[in-house]
Length: 165
Image (tube, one colour):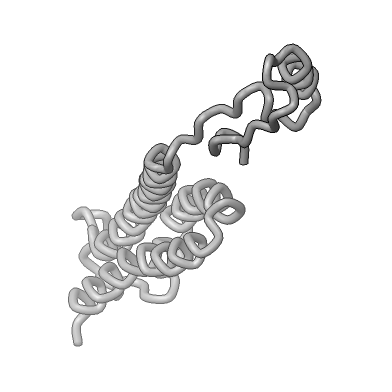
C-alpha cells in the first residue's frame, strides 16, 4: 500500500470521526433535551474547531510522508499529506454543521410539540362560566340569599335546573 492510499484512508477517517461522534452525542442529548442540548450546542462546534486544528497535525505525526530527496533540496512544492490536513478540516466543518443541525432539529421538535399541545388544549370543550348563585367563593351566596328572601314563592323550594354543579 503506497502513501497515497494511506493518505486517502486517513483523510476519510478524519472527516468522518467528528460527524459520527457528534451524531451519537446528539442522539444521547435528545433524550433529555432541556438540560443537555444547550451544552451540546455549545460544546459541539467548539470541539469541532479544536479537532480541525489538532487532528491533522497529529495524524501527520503518526503518518508522515515518505522522504524524497528531490523535494528536500527545495526544487518543488511538496503537497503530500495535504489530504490528511484537509480531511481534518473537513471533519471539523462537518462537525460544526452536524451540531447546528441537531440544535435546529431540537428546536423544530419543541415547536411541533408545543403546537400539538396548544391545539389539544384548544380542542377541549369550553366550560360555561358559573352563574352568580353557584359560586363557591362567597360572592354569589349573598345575591342568591337576597333573591330567595325577595322571591314571591319563598315557601316553595325551587330546584336547580342543572345550572349549578
